[in-house]
Image (cartoon, rainbow, N blue to C red; front, side, top):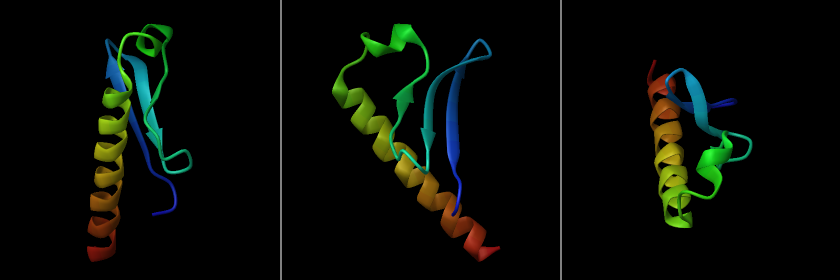
Amino acid sequence: LKNYVSVGYVDGIPFVRYDSESREMRPQVDWMVGNVDQQYWDSETQRSKHNQEVVRVGLVTL
């Protein structure tokens, strides 16, 4: 899968983003930076990597 992007929104505003280049979930708003611990980012990154792989396999199946 060449490009993959996952974005989380709250009230229409993107607050987190994962993409296939960085391979990390990252905050998109200042209030996320100091309000969650590293375990949250690690967990969301792993979940996003898994979701990326699921989509890749699904597209290969098509």
